Length: 189
Image (spheres, rainbow, N blue to C red):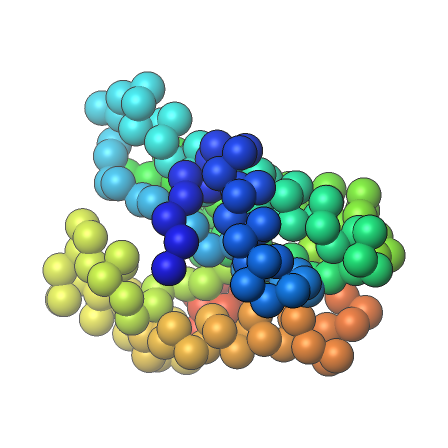
């Protein structure tokens, strides 16, 4: 395991360099680092705002930039960024919603700039069975939210992984700049 602060350019570059050293090349980057401390907008501190934006949005950019510097000269690659259903807005998560909406815009901009060598896409999960959704929600609240979904079950990490795998597979070879919503129908665009 390699530890890095993805929001620090030098650490993102070192992370990518270690991957290349270990595997000999870099074909795929999945940006999945994130943080979501719950906070009401009027109570949110500048430090909370900066930490979420730095980790979620800036970190996605720094790692993408570091990877693209390796991928482009090598003939290309795939980058998949992690957004969220929270792009629609989230109570006690103004910073998180802003960071995830920013990732969608970043994905589109990088897809335009780095095509055709690098395909850049985004996956936006809904409620997934990980410890993260339990922060700030009790089991009853989670169950109620899941009952309201058109596909009424909590998502699994495997649901998200399969979406990422599709985007980096040959099946995703003509897809770039897109956001694939994996949320049981919670958000339909």
